[in-house]
Image (cartoon, rainbow, N blue to C red; front, side):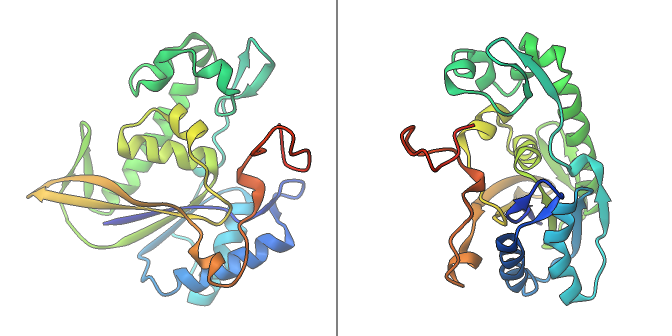
Length: 242
């Protein structure tokens, strides 16, 4: 089985939709996706994700197979000592990197600030909902791998957001989400691909074959949006700092 984790196109957060650039990105993305024989489409309840999916679905004359609130941007907020209220997945490096447990897939959620914000509880809920969808497509979670009850080569697509996409990846690959939230960068409309490997009959795991692919943009001469990034140098005043 193949899973596509797709970040929404360039967002206009003020209206929970897309910028004019974002609509172009969604169009170029649709040109790629309609050729991929995707079995099922799932999208978050937020407008920017649904709008990104809409162009592909319209061309295929399909509706989403599921619109889920658990795919929306990962919502838990915490009270950080350095700046007060913040999203759980937006820390400065000098603050989170000094806490070794953040790098551990089984300990990050026990850091006091995360426990107070019930971040791991929401993470576990999202992971559980993801496993329900994967089970629907033939693979049942068994500890840290999947039992291939109905092995297949279907492709399923999730249209979601950067923070929530990292949660999905964290669960599928067994990596602390803190490392993904702060070390990975998925540009708007990018596609991350995971495929199952079943080296022994009935035992499957997921391997990521590409992360944040924006080849559909480069194929049309479109630069990726900067919305995924912060300033490359602090003195670059025209780039986002916070």
